[in-house]
Image (cartoon, rainbow, N blue to C red):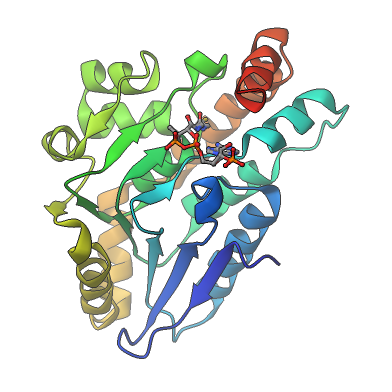
Length: 251
Ligand code: COA
């Protein structure tokens, strides 16, 4: 457990479990411990009938700067053949049975962006930036983003984001279908919780079926996560990726 992730059940949002990034001094970069805490929260949410919606939130002007670079470097230098904690979290996201919403204010980098592809609705502030610099770090897309992003955004925009590493501001993200609504920064949390609360109040079985129908079969998503993971873990240990992580750490 780590207090860099806060798990909350706000009284003002009945039926909602909030998973909040809480490492603002490191731009909410996500460590293995943080992935483990989030995985446990999703597992708990699936099993608890009182949790009827999940909301991901970050801190002021930062949703998340993605995977912790120090953790990337440690994994790159290790002999580990185990999947990284991120991979287990990503599968838990894909398998989550409750509706998920996210509220993004500011930076959403790497998995800070791809996580939203698994959310059913995303609220973003007008100062948000969605960016996945995978290839610049000598990595490849993860979290089934290579499958989900083209479905949502079309090939050109998905390629621009996932392969060319182009950043998408809030308006571009809205136009691409990556977010549901753009609001002013101060309204992100309230709007996200309002949405989550309204989902939590709906007949749960009907909402579950509707969600499954809209999302489609999970098998394809899980298979793509595995396919990406083979390349991702191999690239993580490549000299070009290690050089990119070291360059970031030495800045
Ligand atoms: N992993 C570890 N630490 C990170 C981090 C990450 N992904 N992103 C930011 N941080 C840390 C910085 O090292 C810095 O720590 P320090 O104060 O101890 O030096 C702190 O967070 C603030 O970051 P800083 O870079 O000074 O802020 P910025 O506003 O100038 O830039 C970013 C913000 C997000 C653009 C920049 O930090 C960045 O590019 N981070 C890496 C993002 C990334 O590539 N993630 C992986 C995607 S797969």
